Amino acid sequence: MNDPKELLKASHEDGELSDAAMAALSVPDLGAQIQAGLGIRPDDVPASEVVLVTMMPDDSGSIRFAANSQAVRDGHNLVLDALAASKQEDGVLVHTRYLNGTVLFPYCALAGAVRMDAGNYDPVGGTPLYDQSVVLLGTVLAKSREFAEAGVPVRTVTLLITDGADEGSTRSRARDVAAIVGDLRRAERHIVAALGLEDGSTDFRAVFREMGIEDRWILTPGAKATEIRRAFAVFSQSAVRASSSSGLFTGTALGGFAAP
Image (cartoon, rainbow, N blue to C red; front, side):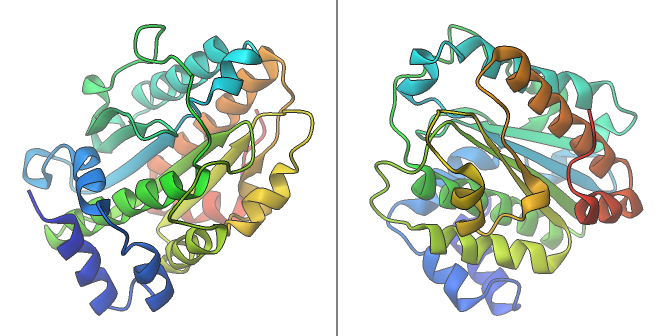
């Protein structure tokens, strides 16, 4: 397995990562956290090109207090089902890491993905949104680089999910996330999307804009379970479209979320 720090360093030396993004990714223990998500080796993936679909479901206690635990589980699983039903499933790798850092499963083929259920998703944590977004996006970058070095073209679709603004980040700020997102956008092979679950007070568009995410890739559903599931369905449609071909990926990236 490649060293995550070396993968990120190589991306920086090639100009794919700016100085600001590299500084944001130079935090203690980041390599070990990224390593936990890298999963399957490129040599074990038979596809000639791959799409990495990465999700970070919020597992903060407010999800439970709002009675949205099952809606988040259902939404995550809906995305897996939609990708599995697509014609491109063999070239799709998925990875889910919760907002408080627990890895549900590292990058793997869809057949190996773990569905969220009451046994593996019990939202009781905080909201270290910036810290964990840096970890997740660092994992996306490292895995992308790993495939690139193996000569395999790669595109990525990432979804950050939260029902509140950042609380508890100790190492990273919104501008750190924005530096990484900006580099991903400039590469034109990556989509970074965000889903803000209504909490009655947070301006999620403002939160996500400060993190560098474009308006067209922000969803802000209401607090009802049906609205949350619908938002995940919208993301799943975009993820399926983005995984269909490089041409459709470009159009999807420029167009933003598709209608449900």
